[in-house]
Length: 352
Image (spheres, helix red, strand yellow):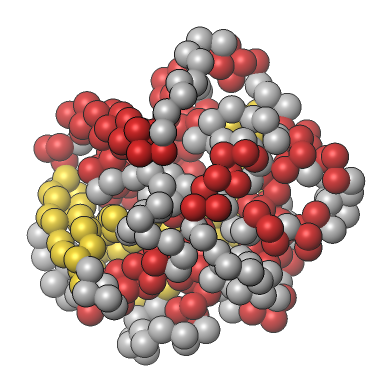
């Protein structure tokens, strides 16, 4: 039985930041979506001043299975030769399936391309409330198949493809990886997902928690209880995000919807996995229990916990020292998965 509650005690540094935050404004869903997306894009645009001359970007259009044109953008470090074959990191943004745009990820993707020396492909999947489950999952799969078909034009290495994302994006990445490795997608046999990077991942649908709770020493110690009213993401907002997906009769056995509830026999097949988990986050236990499942089934795992900070803390940049650790975990995590690491068979948590 597990008890991860020690990671959920807010850090002194976080409490100082939290004390400066303005009260949340009452907004309609459409107003909230617009304001969050605009804010993210402004922050990304300002930060790109540091990276714009170090990365080459190119926009792409991807046809989905229902003929919708998905936006995508690739990022290639200028320090690499234009013809050099680079590993590919495929990125899915966070935002509860409600928030996120292509440009809001420019800084994250540029930093990873430059510092990890990879070709990054950033996919803008479709969002709620206009598009419900499983549209975003279909978009992720269709975008991956596009990457498979375009490895050569991208000057990418078909043997070194890592998929990953943040929060809801990590959910999509985890589901995509499982589908690809179970041969549920028409992936060419010459291509493979060699690793996954899952940051502050959501991995279990709200109404399918029972088996997660059964692994926790006491319900009061679970992250769903301990961090029920946490800042940035609380259980009420998580339930809002999940509700907007409009899932009818959610089934714990639906592994697209619940990649965190993977049977042991399927877990053994997964590639090296880096996890970054926030301690003061309702999603904490989903990430740590997934890391435990993979590690104990022979998957090389690199599990990292950011103690005492909430979901989405990276937005506070220099105001939180642990944000530099977040960047390092992402960059090192990509490099680590590409290095074909061996497994220890033990569940180890690296604290930051």
